Length: 297
Image (cartoon, rainbow, N blue to C red; front, side, top):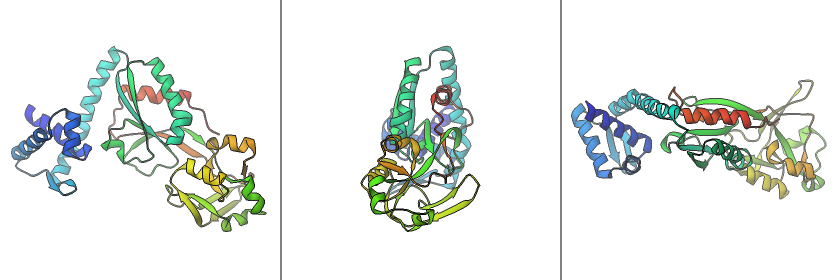
């Protein structure tokens, strides 16, 4: 019984790591020992769990059933053990947090620094990444994400929101004057390739009239910082978070286009894996984040 529980833990680690080698590193055992434990588990159950191929491995139907039945059990055990320790001591251990580069630099890292002042025994690993795919495989504890979340398998908590606005550089506007909102459909657009429809937007004014933009991207990039640089280089118009371009707006380098028309506010959410019990150190950081983050309006 005990041996099989240990082997199931190793099996779950292999699946979540994506490879035998990464699992071995996390478990502090050799890759060969990982293989031995997986083979012993398969022999005990008399059914194959993993099929190796040139890209790594795939789970069999039995493997998927075993993983889905036990992953939450082991996560809860680990959470309970950590909470027992943390409730009787100061917060300890490593907290792995991710966000976009831009949001991390402007907001998250200063909040992390303040949190560490209150909890000096916590170590922080910050990952600058906008993808949620690595949340499980890279064992990220918390991910701060901007905008709409599409992955319903992940748990999340909305902690704030912010404005996005349509802008262009003042220099670009001198050569490409926009006399009406309709003109933006034929303008040069700089698109965010992370978005599904980066040049389709619905604006509303104070009378709740609606205007739909359905433009074509001339330039695109997957980084808000790069979009800002393209706008600054007089390449066209773009939609950007207001907080990322405050200085350019104040200095007059960027112009907020048609400010009587607005776009929906965007959510800031903290995302974590689907186990129903959140670890104490994660709850503590989320509470700290909610308390200290500015409401970006």
